Length: 214
Image (cartoon, rainbow, N blue to C red; front, side, top):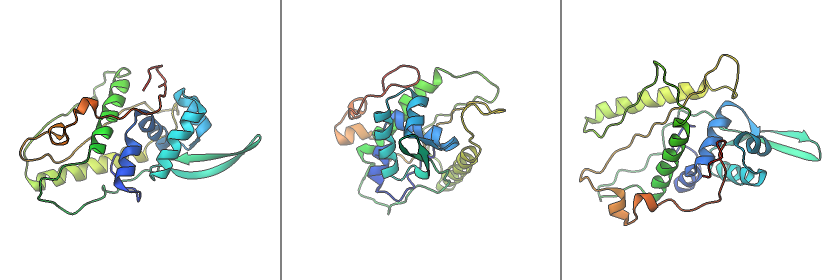
């Protein structure tokens, strides 16, 4: 999944569509192959109704597209895929009024953290394993160079995605979140008055492949 907000849908709708670990799992799966709601329900061990619900939100936000319509017994099945995109996130005009990202971003990051915890339980130590975390002050040129390199690497990985379990492939995980911070050091929770840990709104319960509710 490319986490940039590059769809034509309103930014807040796109962020809300991403703000659930099950939908993040769906985007990962649909990057490698096109599947129907029934296929996703079986793959993620959730109900068909839940798969359809999450898939509908992703499609409405422009994060997945209709690949084809298959004839199945008793009707037709819509098959979706997540288009690999290296387009930069939607840009907004610069502001100097202390504006900070809306709480919808916090929901996305909380979902990413939850999904990272799930994947980390299956982590295998290899020479390629890497971890980077930093809160740094750098020049604008250095920052833009890093972001461009990150986007190119992300696009390369997405374009290489194949159906799960394909021969001569390895299961991998990559999570990248890069953004500017306020210069005064204030946290989003301090600005919004909502504790970060309590900012994720409850949603329909789904069960992950590992049997954990998310």
